[in-house]
Length: 93
Image (cartoon, rainbow, N blue to C red; front, side, top):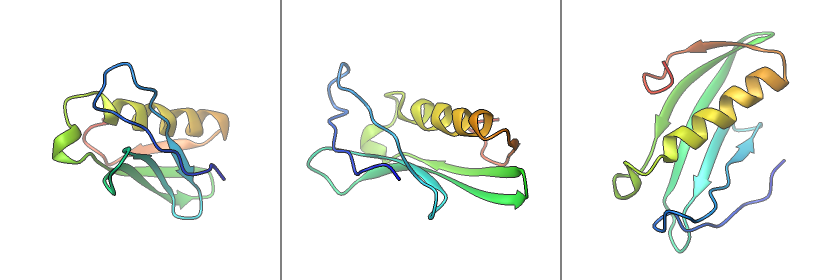
């Protein structure tokens, strides 16, 4: 399981780290100095199928490409684990 990561997304060149919590079935990005975080939630809907359900980014961080990082991490997970993806989340569709 990934360790908690702190980062600053206000600066464009800041590194963005995506955490994957398999137990909670979510990908997340935590923002430096804040309790805010962006998340992408998923559920297993079959033995080898995940439903990528919902992506949420706090208003203050929207328009900065945050959701793109969550989506990429989720799709990388699907490929690495040889899963099929059902895309309920409108952003990933």
